[in-house]
Structures are given as C-alpha cells and as structure tokens.
Length: 220
Image (tube, rainbow, N blue to C red):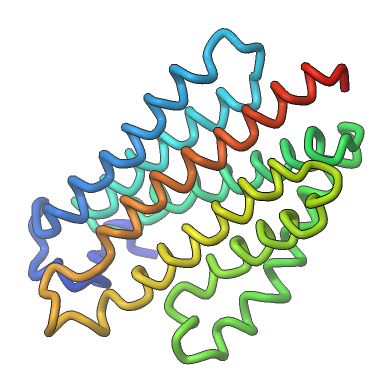
C-alpha cells in the first residue's frame, strides 16, 4: 500500500496542496475547543476515563486536521484511529458506569462492538444514501439503544444519550451530503461534520461526567 497516495473525497479539495481544504482543516478546531472545555470540567474530579476521553477528543481534532491537509493514506489512519478509540473507550465507560457491570463484563461488552459493527456496516453499505458513511451509522443506533434501555434506570443519562444520538444523526447526514451538494455548495457540507461532532463528543463526555457525579451523590 502506498501510504503517501493522495485521497480526494470532499467537495472542497480542488488539488493536492496542503491547504486545498482550508475550511475542512480549520473547522477541526471544534474538537480542540470541545476538548479544552471538557478538560476544565473534568479535571480534579477523579474521573480517569473521562480524562482519557478528553485526550482522545483532542487527538480526533489533530488527526482530522492532518487528513484534511496532507490528505494521504497515513493521514487517514491518523484520522480514524482516535475516533475508533473514543468509541471503544466510551462504550467501556458506559458499560461499567451506566450499567454497573464489573470490569470484565464491561470489557466483553466493549469487544461485542466488533461483531455488532461487522453485522450492521454491510447493511448500511447496501443502502444508497447511507453507504458513504456506512462505517459510522451503527454508532448513533447503538447510542439510541442505550438511551432506550437506560430510560428507567438513569433517565437523565438516557435523555443525554438521546440528544447525542440526534446530533450525530444530523452530523452524519451532512457528512453524507457533501459530494451530492458540491454544485450548490462548493465548499461542501463536511465542515458541519467537524463542528457538530465536536459538539456531540464534548456533550457525550459531559453526559458521562454528570452520571458519575450523580451516582456518587446517591452513594452508588
């Protein structure tokens, strides 16, 4: 595989230059701003998993910036690996702290994400609109499922997760429309994937933070 091969998959990119996607590059500040805000809210509260999520959120912004500037295969890995690690870390945290599972159960539940995604991604790949973001669509579906099943156990957390799922659905919709709307919107709609995802991921950390604090207050 040629790790330096150029990737052109977005409306805004009109050539191979470093700043060929200036708006897509700059809007990655949304992730860094969200990470900074959540770092300030999480620090000193004894939540190591939340702090790991904050670090991964910042890494998502850096990795995505690299992808939208260098636009190479290696930069694509720098883009997707922090996203995958954030999903898996949050899933582990949710299993452990939302459900109260032991460490081994939370870990097994996290590993179950792989067959879950393997089963659903081909389904989304078979649907015309969803194929562009097929690898991501199982995520809001899973968040929504957690929201439904947590509604009686932790209603505030369930509402927070539902809001997160809704923001991600909107974000994915705009991501998927990017190339379709090139003629009407020359810069594309991918920038909103960054802005809304920065908001959504920061919000998801906040949902976790609030849940942990509420559990401590209740003596759980």
